[in-house]
Image (cartoon, rainbow, N blue to C red; front, side, top):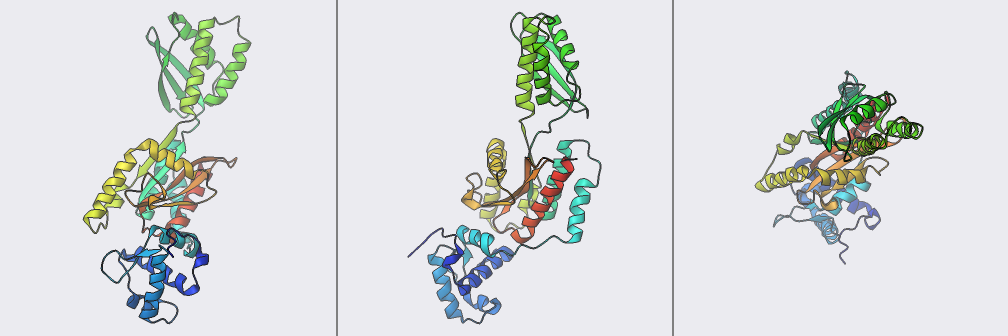
Length: 354
């Protein structure tokens, strides 16, 4: 009876588990099929090639391994890889040297902005894993220094937001009809008197309170500009996502066949679909720890046969503010990359919580 897609180790005895483990580990190391004769030399138990072939036949019927061609060797299916990762993988730990390298590369140098911290983390995880590094985070909720309003045309104004760390955001604001130019100046003056040192969300709440007490000071159109502006800015600035992908060139290394090159070309096309990547990564934000997507388990990367290993990072109140991880072929070194992603995410979270 075939049970394609089986994921429970309970269906396997010790002999079957040992053989599946060796097939997967051989695939992760070489990418090549492994046969019964080679398996008999490396298994921790004494089995004849004939006995191994019988077990391999059972594993194949369960949908955990397959024969890629007429060779007697076998490779793991996606279900076999998933079973290995979930139940048979022995995850290593990072060496002291690797931990120190991660800490020094991310936290050991002065960073000028939130985005640069994330970019450095993406570069670092890409370099260590030899895969593409990916980081998704909420845009930093910057604290404001001032806001300037510049009239562009009767119904459009340029909004210039300057943060305390000198980051500048420009936005176009649609103005209510009939607004006199002096109202922009009045609105900017009113806003700047109340928002210094606040985030956009905090500024919106503060200004709302002040507006209710300032009915006599501001006319209706000026108040409308202020409320429209703060509502729009808080939605676009505080809730935007920053997506960073680094080290795509690592995915071009060690390609063994034309189909590998096509797989990577497809992956690059997938990565261009920024919104879909964001939606995929947002699913991983709900995970408590490291989340692993293998092959077609994620719709976006299914055609390219890629794996995604990601972990969330948190702020000082334990709120998830982003995720970090790697994208690579399905035969990446999971045992090494899983703890690497997990530790790096923790370091990024600590750094951004300072």
